[in-house]
Amino acid sequence: MATVIYGSEVSASIKSELKKHVEQLHNMKKRIPKLVVILIGNHPASMSYVKGKQKACEQIGMLQEVLHFNETITQNQLIKQIEVLNNDHTVDGILVQLPLPKHLNEQQVLQTISYKKDVDGFHPYNIGKAVLQEKDTFLSCTPKGVMRLLESIGYDDLSGLHAVVVGRSNIVGKPMAQLLLQKNATITVCHSKTKDISMYTKHADIVVVAVGKAKFIKKEWIKKGAIVIDVGINRLEDDTLCGDVDFEEVKQIASYITPVPKGVGPMTIAMLLENTWESYKRTNEEGEFK
Ligand code: GUN
Image 1 (cartoon, rainbow, N blue to C red):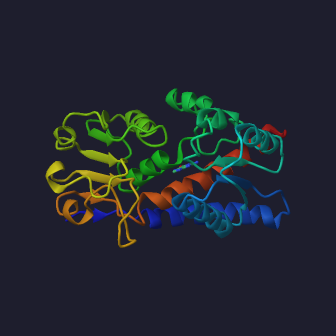
Image 2: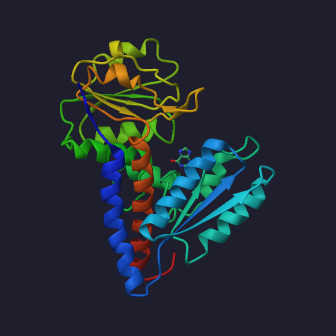
């Protein structure tokens, strides 16, 4: 039976470290790091994710603001708003909650965010720096959080291991494959056009799944003793949450498995806080406003 990796516990210890740093700033009456989240429309899942981000900031004493716009906001209005935040010296992190309504150009929006405040790590500048393994970048929060979970179970160097990433999104799949590669794993990326995904997952030492399909990964698809990381969050008809992995089945065969909820989700938020803290520190080290 697999050991369950609780991201909720790993993230709690990361948040408590960050809280100490922010408390010191409060005690010294210094400026406090601030995250601004832009939310457009009333997408229920997005609203719930944004609430989680707000709550986490409050827990560690970080400032946060949510700018909630109607779905009718135009591209120009949104870009102007981001430019205001880019020039606001009290703002360290800017996050535009995705997905955006169809009439908005997502790439143009993300590229408007100053790469110095791009705590989501979605700006092409930061993606490029991440691929080059340069330090002064922001890594995409979910893949960064998954790497921390692997470290938490002693898997820092992945030499000799075969990692299969299922899903190729810009937010998770692509950066995930990069980070696993940087830790020396051999990578396969499967996606909706892959002929037989199970042919790859069956041979994987590590499987990371981010496809957004409830219980997509079955026990027969997993090698005995594999590590299974579930990035999916799906709402079932009875209103409960479940991942992309059939947890009850797969935990019988995996060595480690992440649950949903309390798995990867809390790590994404912890990494967002960490990136915002990092942005704040960089501003201060530069000795100038961004
Ligand atoms: N939508 C789903 N996950 C994310 C995320 O990590 N960042 C943003 N901005 N939007 C998301």
